[in-house]
Amino acid sequence: MAKNNIKLEAKNLNAYYGDFKALKDITISMEEKAVTAFIGPSGCGKSTFLRTLNRMNDYIDGFRTEGDILLDGKDIYDKNIRVDELRKEVGMVFQKPNPFPKTIFENVVYGLKIQGIKNKAHLEEAAEKSLRQTALWEEVKDKMHKSALALSGGQQQRLCIARALAISPSVILMDEPTSALDPISTAKIEELIYELKNDYTIVIVTHNMQQAGRVSDNTAFFYMGELIEFGKTKTIFTSPSNDRTQNYITGRFG
Amino acid sequence: MSHIDKELKQIQEKLLEMWDLVEYQLISSREALLHHDLVLAERVVKLGKKVNRYDTKIDRQCENFFALFTPVAVDLRQILATIKINANLERIGDTAEGICRIVKKLNGPLSEPLAQESRLLEMYDITLVMLADARKVLTNYDADTAHAILKQDKVINKIYRKSDKTLVDFMHQNPANVATGLQLYTLIKKMERVGDQITNITEEIIFYHDAKMIKHRSDKKKKNRNKDDN
Image 1 (cartoon, each protein chain N blue to C red):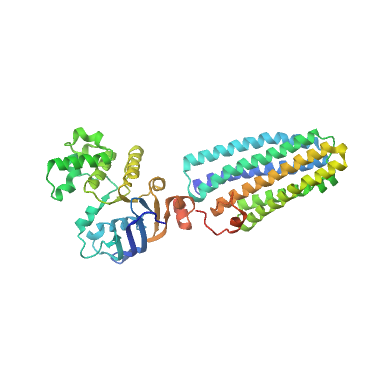
Image 2 (tube, rainbow over the protein chains, first blue to last red; image 1 turned 120 degrees about the vertical axis):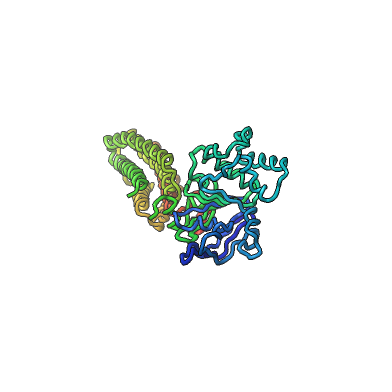
């Protein structure tokens, strides 16, 4: 089904929290510069899967995986992979906007500073570029040194996306990025996702079916740790082939 | 039953009520024609207004459903199909009405032997069965019956294609009755359209239940039902 290159791939992936098997034999390919949406009821494993894509689950006691996750064909769970290097490549945006209690400028350049970049002109240029990409620049250019916490929720979320973009990742993972936002802010983020896919590979977890329909190219439906159906979003939302997918997207689950 | 299912059920019930009215119009147009029943003909014409109200009502219900429920998958297909079935039913009602307007202009009942010979009655019989079967597959889907309805339309088309020769012969032999021959031809043409409209309806029902788009396909592809259409 892929017309583009495959950016991210899971092969026979199993994931466990202790004895609990949270992901069961997941095999899926995600296209480069496209949006892949993960949908499914709470507890279906979609967020667990998203978080394995940049090893966010490494910190959880008893969490382990079997199988492969390949980024550009390389296994990200390989011993030689440095997790900080991986996260430069695979950025993440969370459900609730989580800016640092710092200025807007400090938030955007945080990752770059950690990487050791100190040149002020370079940092300023990078900050402006990221903020323009997230359509936030005009709104914040005159208060770059004010606290990020003074921004609205929608602006904070766009700031978090700008922060993720500043370190030039190739993949952005989004875990329900608009569930805490009003419809206008949601529309702005969705528009942003649509723009960003020209340059980035995006994977988004969403509980909003219409959002999956609007922003994604491909949709994966998870249920009880299994990947039930994966296909073009158009097909999933008009004629899904699995009854469980249909029941879920039409709101008849349970 | 969930809220969305109640709404869908209400829309379907309205559509079926309209369906019954249209079916009654079609059956009655046949009776009016054969018995030159002007009272019945007038009733069919008047019923047209009621059918139009159903048409508007169902369109409005579908519009609201889109706006309020943003349906997907089978729900989306049901509403899309309903809109088109509604339009086609309304046209069938119009045709029955048109036939009754012709009845009002006739001097007497249509001669039964002529109706038989031109196979107009056979067309009526087939379309009425098609219409009843289509109603059945809408509420209780069965792919084989649905595809059998589509085949019946082929019979109707064949009768239509052969009818001109029969009627030309009739008019040659009965130069005094050319007007009758022309009227009969109009009726046959109308029944051919009804067959097409029931075909459209059936295709929508197949789309709704099987997610397969079969309209405008060649016959060969129609038979190959398991092929995906993406």
